[in-house]
Image (cartoon, rainbow, N blue to C red; front, side, top):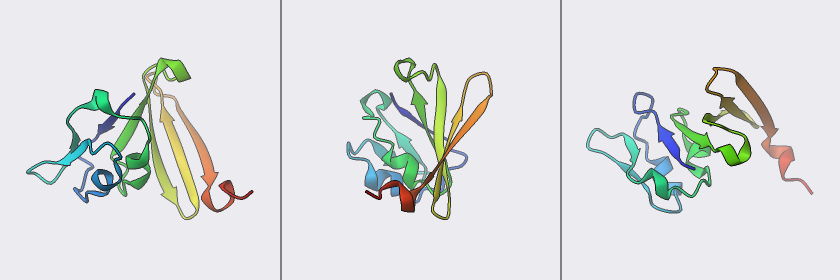
Length: 104
């Protein structure tokens, strides 16, 4: 499992680099984020949730039914929306209310 970074969307803020637990994300000379060794990605999705411009997507593996789908997040207030784009161009969305999701 790994991420992909859309260079045309990236603003070079470095938030993804800061939260990556494996220190895998770097900032290039054009101030764009990149992952040098995608195969080393842990799949934690921390960078996806931090990216303010939604430039990072995560490949969903066949082991979880993804079969080449990509997932990214978008935030709207307390709602974190997980958007899944499959290879056949269908889109699914899962909305999580972050204020309510961790209540016990």
